[in-house]
Image 1 (tube, rainbow, N blue to C red):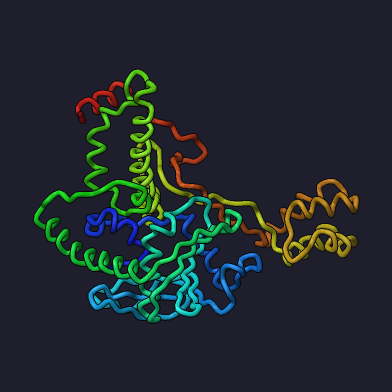
Image 2: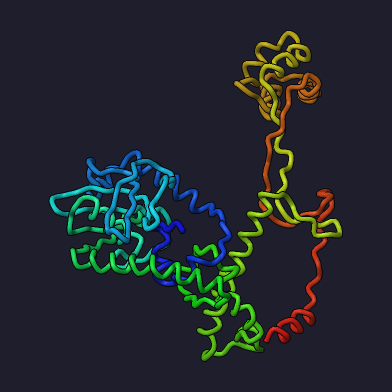
Amino acid sequence: MLLTMSALPRLLNCTASAVLERAENYSEWAGMGQDSHADLAADVPDELAHLCPDHSRAEVKIAYDVAARTARFLGDGDGREYGALGPFEIAGSIDRLWVEGDTVFVLDWKSGYADVDPASRNWQLWGYGLAAATALGKSKVVLRIVYTKQGNRCDEHTLDALDLAEFAGRLEWLHRRVPELQAAKQRGEVLDTREGSWCKHCASKHVCPSKVALIGQMSGLVVIGESVTPETAAVAYEQIVRVEQIVTAARQRLNTYVDDHGPIDLGNGRMFGRYVRKGNERLSGSVAMQAIREVVGESAKEFESVAIEHTTSKAAIERAAKQLGCKRGTVPAVVRRVRELGGTTHAADPMPIGEFARDRSEPAEKPQIDTAEINRLLESAG
């Protein structure tokens, strides 16, 4: 089973998640983060130079063998393809890496607004540090997390030889524990999962025993009662956060299905998914020039100089007609002729995923919420 450095925060807190069924979800924000990382890999801005020297290496791929306690570099460059790995290797990609004397520096860019685990207990960075120190024969590592959206704030922590040896032992235990849990799962045993911040990016929420148990407990939620009191407010908040995590993960899986397979027919003329509507009409500049010559006549050249760029639009043709004082009806005549000549296109305008009517000229009729039925289901779940 392939383990990666980015999964270490989750696996060291909830090892059972390594053997649960996974549902891969794409995150738009993660994609944006990868774009930002690519920019920083290509060039470090002057305001960050004091945190990352010119001689540092960018996007360094590395693998650490937990059994042999060895490490090797796999190359540089973006992407997360690591090639063939050994059965006990954990791979990862370091944003920036350099050496000063006996010290290895590992830097991780964070281009979002939210904080991650601090460097002092960020197990992903500890894995990078252990692998880099092992591969380079060093005994000290400085970990840096730089928040580019937070004034380039830097969170730093230093690991010594004892820290590195202790963490190597934890990773060795992890690789022994995962096969044991896999065997327990095959025997039908209920796995012991732990909830926490590491659940956020877990792809196994839909089968997680902790999350599934929560669904069965929903009829006892504090917030379903008649009122929330000062004594129950904190509990209510924690319960709502847990439920929202489950719903968000389910929504992501449903959206992924819709993007892969198209809209879902909900019946009664209702659909759920994404549709692409016809966007604004675009006029071909070359075809528009022909139409202008046919319609405008003697003023065509001057008209073209105002209306035509590499492409044109109905708005540009309207400006030209107004500026040159053309006779009434010139604009619709030119546009009509452009269409006749096949010089128009419509840009695709993808709409967000959501519910819509099969006949999109009619509004989707929303189903009525049956409160009594919902209460009955909640009571039966208790």
